[in-house]
Length: 249
Ligand code: GLP
Image (cartoon, rainbow, N blue to C red; front, side, top):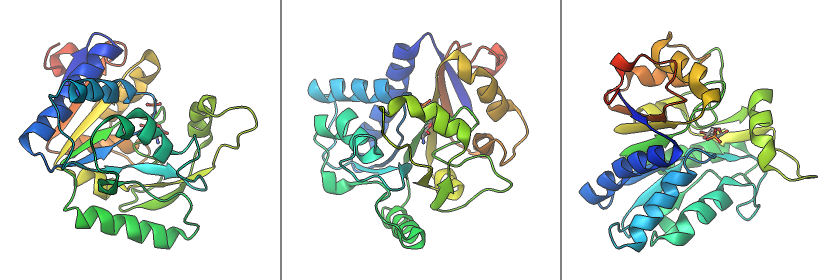
């Protein structure tokens, strides 16, 4: 694993966007695994800037997202479909037919999970998977559990995740209690993984994920055994990690 320290959120976003843009430049028809949440917003803004300057072309890029709330339609403002359109897809020249997310409106979990697993297979796997880190160590919506779920599955969200995501929901909006998420096997099969983390409140869980025991109780800890993992995190998130473990520490 390679850990890069960023001075702040802006620097983290620029460094991480650089890795994604290199992937697109080196393989114009690459498959990007994308994430939502507050962490990647700056990365998407940076990618949009470079696209607008003519430095990036998304014409052949395909994307597959980690997760989606169950019960939210694509035009619901809280859905990850909507998030991706607003924060990235609408501002670049990606073909919407080349973007894939789980369908939150499919009630039959088995049907949706099979459909989504097939999509990942048909795309030939993921070249570069972008990940954020949940406060309890979740990646995508793979919550702490007794065992790792391999493929796409429907998950009951933990209270900590519901609480962490609730500020994004307005008054009177119902926060979904379950979601579809890519499984650990699909994530781990990505050729490259880029984990981005910022903020003081993630320092403990980042340390646990990167240097603690590998356990499904800290889902992100499995990333330690991926053979092409890059972490870009700000100083606050890395405050509990020894500088000797950091490439530019
Ligand atoms: C959410 C998402 C994850 C995301 C994580 C962290 O619940 N399902 O994909 O990485 O929580 O979110 P944030 O970046 O807002 O801290």
